[in-house]
Length: 406
Picture 1 (cartoon, one colour):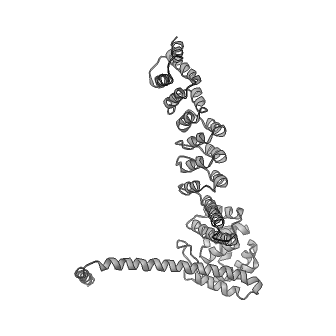
Picture 2 (cartoon, one colour):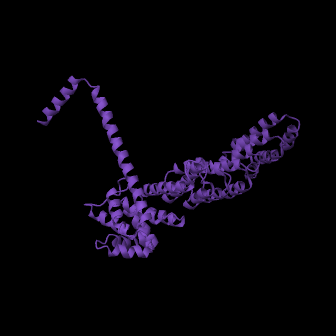
Picture 3 (cartoon, helix red, strand yellow):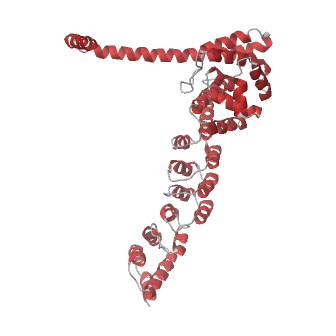
């Protein structure tokens, strides 16, 4: 009787009044202490309101039920397939919707619905994987920024593969805590490609020059990402680089000339198929025969072997080698030794290698100049501050230091 009276009343009232009544009825069902019969009647009336032609009524139902665990499943599933402004309320918050429901809504719904799903407080790996396959860049940006999203490495790679050209998405991915190093490398590579296309399109660089600059910048970034990575991360990074065609002899030589032996060992282990311990033993063989055997096993170009051998020889001559915690910069002394070794080769074999090494040397010289310039600027800033201190106060300071030293 109550249901019939309520539904009859809704036929003659305005949409605004019907929306108020729908909200009150839904909240009474969810939170009031009703007897079973009244509860059944209220539930039936709420579900019947799904057929109301006014979106105001259905929105009122969505607002009332969005956070409720006890909301009728039939009602919530129907609202999740309504107009975007209505569906978004339950898609973003309702605990009633299962992963299967959300995957289905993401597949058949619009981008607004997928954005709402991506903003849910918790997202399972399965749901994240589905969004990675079908969502657009804006929804994936929200997903990447969601700390409660369990995004697997494979899903992250798929996101980069599909929408890595989107700058805002790249920024959101790079800001994500714990981003795997190989995924970070993939994002960096897409950024480098975007910059290359931009400068080429503007006519600032020729395509050939732009490609070289991009490759060298990407290689520097790669070694920066590898810095401090553990063995597992390095293996995954190297595997990604090889699959992407970026594990080049030039990159491995750059790593060696930068003292990045952990990366060098991981790269040679991947290319040679040997265990990491075996590679380390061959690479650091003081006689050099181990390096020669490892080099050939890895399938690297014979013309570059003298440069590799000279670089390793220079590295071994260091008192304690290079610190992996230091900068990723190139060593000019190692480069010089490599150039000297390659100059003995026939010109046809040596000119391209020497040109590469000369570019490395120029890069190292610029890095040294930047470091020196920053140091000089810091000293100048300190001196400028000291000049503002009264001479009497400085004299007293020096006297106190002498007294303490005595």
